[in-house]
Structures are given as structure tokens and as C-alpha cells.
Image 1 (cartoon, one colour):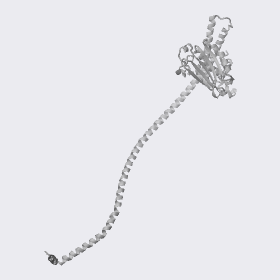
Image 2 (tube, rainbow, N blue to C red; image 1 turned 90 degrees about the horizontal axis):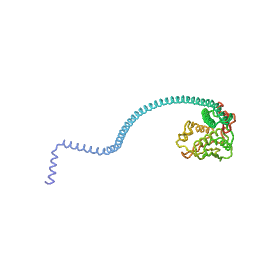
Image 3 (cartoon, rainbow, N blue to C red; image 1 turned 120 degrees about the vertical axis):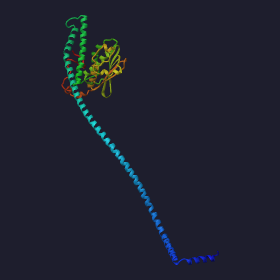
Image 4 (tube, rainbow, N blue to C red; image 1 turned 180 degrees about the vertical axis):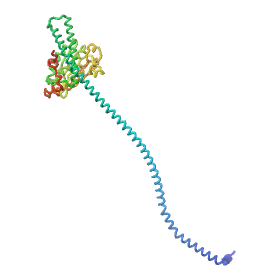
Length: 389
């Protein structure tokens, strides 16, 4: 079909449409154009608003997530606080229990201290009573012992006539026994005085040579074995000592006496040497049996003796060495012991040359004893503690 014929047909068809339909169609077409133009105007504004609101929504979402996390943390902290509170309640209960136990313990300790104080007072009273008893007993024994010793000496001096050989031996045994008992009584009395705080020191000025001269006269007669020699050596110089001569001599006599007892052969040496800072060492060395290391502290305990053959041959009271240690302490010094079993012993007394009481007036020196008791009787002891019976 040709183009002219088609246009003719379309035109005929349009002319056949009613006029009211054409009007309605044109109106609708115009309305469509108007709506399209309005939408074209509003699209950029709608797009802008949507882009503006997107960050706010994201921020709101983030805040919500953070709120949820914080809520979870708050719940977790609340649980932890609850657990801590429970632990705290348990800890408080434990603390209260411990406090109660401590209070009970403190009450027990206070009661124990009170009991110990009572026991200490009882022991102090018992010690004082013992010391008083020993002191009184020693004084009471001294008089008859002195009498027996004087009578024995008179018999041995043939004052009332000659003695037979047997009588002389028996009187010598009596004299020896009296000397032994006298030494025991003197040791008991000295220990009692020291423990009671009534031992009086009387410092005098003397030299080591004078001290050794007196000890030679006292101790050489005690040597009964010709295979044992006794020697004295002064290496301390001639500077005088200012201390109690009788108490120092008593310490050395005890050392020498023990050395003679337990040395069967060899040598006993008494040596004086100078120490630092104005101190003096007086040592008594022997070649006797020696003392085992385990027993070297025990020998200074009262009434303790080391068992052995020589000890059984020369029994004693076990008071000599404890007394020497106490006397050395009163003299401001100390006792030292070096010994090896089977190789002899060395007992030393280390004292200051000048006793602290030397600068005290004589009246005050004697008043070191609370009661004034403990002053040695001049009739009982001579210089350096030599007996003057």
C-alpha cells in the first residue's frame, strides 16, 4: 500500500472518533506533561535529602551499637562487683576470725608472761636462799676445818713429840683431806657470793713477776712426779697491773692445779704476754691428755666432769673451772681454752691491766658488795691468795 493511501485511511479514522474523546485524550495528554515536568523539578531535591540523611542514620546505628556494648560492659561490671562483694564478705569474716584468734593468743601470751614472771621470782628467791645457805654453811665449816688443819700441822711439826712413820702418814692424809674439803668450801662460798652479787673486788697494784713468784711458791710443792716440770715466763714487760691480785692468782692456781693433775709427764708452762689496747694474757699450757672438742664447753658447767682414767684417779667437784670463768668476768676479762685430745691443753685468762674499779675510791670499791659481805679475812688469805692458816 502506498503512503498516500495510508494517510488517507488514518485521516478517515480520526474523523470518525467522537469529539468528546479527542478532547478527553488531549486533556489527559496535557496532564501527563504537567506531571512529568513536576517530577523533573522535584527529583534533585529528593536526591539531596536522601544523601543528607544517610550519615545520620549511620551515626544512629553506631550509637545504638555502642550503647549495646556499654550495656554489656555495665552488666559485666555489675557481676564483678557482686563477686567482689561476696569475696569481701568472706574476707571480712576471715579477718574477724583472725582478730578473734589473735586476741585469744594475746590473752594466752599475757597469761604466760605472768606465769613466767612468777616462776622467775620463785627461781630468784630459791637462788637467793641457795646462795645464803651455801654462804652460811661455808662459814660454819671453815672454823672446824681451820682447827683440824692447824692440829695436823702441829702434829707434823712434832710440837707434842715425835710420830711414828705410820702416824706421820696418817696425819699427812688428814691434812690432805682437809685441804681438799677446804678448797671445796672456798669454791662453794665464792660461787655463792658471785651469784648473790656480794663478791667484793679489791684492786691493788702489782707486777707479773710478783704474781709469778707467789705462784711458784704455792704450786711447786704440788708436783709429785719428777717427769713433770713447771716453768714461768714473763713476756709482758714490767708495767704493773691494777686489779684484784688474789682473784687473779686464784684463777691461775686453778689452771695450774688442773694441769698438774692431768699431766703425767712433760711440761707445764705459765706465760704472760701483752695484748692490744692495754690487755694482758696469762696462759697455762700442759702436755697432758687434752680435752675433746665436744667437752670443751661442758667443763665450764657446774658439777660437770669429763669422764676418763685420770679423772677417776683425781676426783673433784666440777666447780673449779666454772668459778674461774665467773672470776674472770668479775675482773673484766674472759677465759679461753685451746685443746686437742691427746695433745694437751692451754687455758688462758685475758684481762685488762687496769680494772674499772681502780679509779673508784677504796670505800666505794668495798661497797660494790650490797651488804659489805664478801671481804676476805686477812687471817685467811695472804698476798695473791696464799693461805695463811
